[in-house]
Image (tube, rainbow, N blue to C red; front, side, top):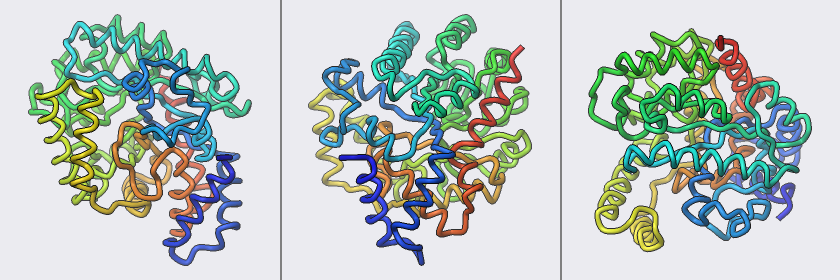
Length: 401
């Protein structure tokens, strides 16, 4: 399907629930014009791991130049274009459950896959490692492709590994994933080091020296504060939402949002339903329990495992969650930290059941339309989609030395 037709379908589906919206055609024209000048710069997308799981990074077997809605993928090039995405941080994630010696190897394989993906689609993607390179790619009509490593376990407790990943193009490191590292506490694990230990503080200082974004998504609140006590760069969350609206430990509490504002930082609001509403949080917890049960019986992610999980989801559908729930979190971050400190980090292809009306990467215009009906100006929406993220990337580069 042509991107323009896909966008029209999004707006037609959205318009049935928009409050007092202007006509579909007028809103579509407004959002198209906005995204032409300020495309979405998204903080987190897990396509690379999905491509590994489904096809062993065989870009011939799964060609993202073609619409992949017949598969489980939420991301492909036509839908990125339809969604107005101009810059994407591709997540370089490996599971914590791997044996530690494999963490670094698998992370390097994921970095390699990301670079090969960009090289395979030069008419659509361009590798970017700086704010200037993002602007150049967008200006040339390409989707700027940045790399972010999701989880401090990936560096193998080695600053040398961190430096080499930066040399390969990685521009953020999420300090933890679902489990603690030996040097940092995760939001979803038992506290162990009280936030950061001495090595953890060294990691943050070295990231500042490299001009690398210190990503605080997934970390415990104590780790957020500990990192901000050390870092000289802007606070940064690649894919988190507001804890005041959904009390998930992965979300950002208001006292940290104040520090985001004070450091001229950024929270890129994520679309994961379990981080948006309490009902979906309970559902996601039950889903996690089912995944743990299946992990004890089957290799994680293999076809039988996926079929069993799909059967559980069919019997236990996600509670309602939609565009307005995402917009509520965007607005809370704006109200607490300021309009200069909010962005978008969808977590597509890392989220099993995105909000209704935002099922894939073509869905960003629906969110922008909802915010427009709430009174957001084009200048404010442009900060949300592009300018805030670009500013924080550039400011972080300036800490290098």
